[in-house]
Length: 270
Image (cartoon, rainbow, N blue to C red; front, side, top):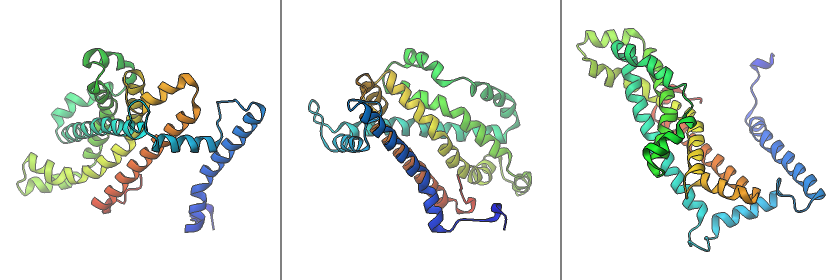
């Protein structure tokens, strides 16, 4: 049997899934042990035990000045900003994506414009956002919206264009208006793709959030990482990085399960 036709069983699939993570952990542990054996005061690669102790302190011990557990407070603030930015971007992306995909005049007017806008690096206009919207919450949310909305519009407009023309013609034959076609024919087919597109845009959304928090914020996960970098507190930085990675994974998994539950016929595989 050719390798292309072989599929691992459940135990082997689980082993293969965990193998890369185990290899990375072993490589880090060996590198940390080598550096610490040469210099016990080395801060670049703290021992895994130190990272675990730091994580326990960050998650369970309140800050002496504020009395709050900063890890949970930073997480709540960052997730609020991320949720607002991604939610607004998803709404705009769905609306304009369907309009561009369904209406030729809208497509002729905005398709090229969106394509050009999507080429602008969002981080390059971050100073403009701070000048325009200030250093508060609005500028951080706007950065996320500007960063991922063009991708969502282009992806969803393409999905709308891929709807078989026969379905639209049949709806027109039955007397459906443009609004009815949009809501009853296009929307049910675009919504599964919306969830998948949001999942694909979560990585850039986290990047824009962390960058904005690092530059102009006094709360949030990104702010805390850049605050402690001056002290070379790698145990704190790595704890926050691992926590952000776990949050991103959980959000992505939740969206995947939501897609499978609401739209099982799509067999979401992303």
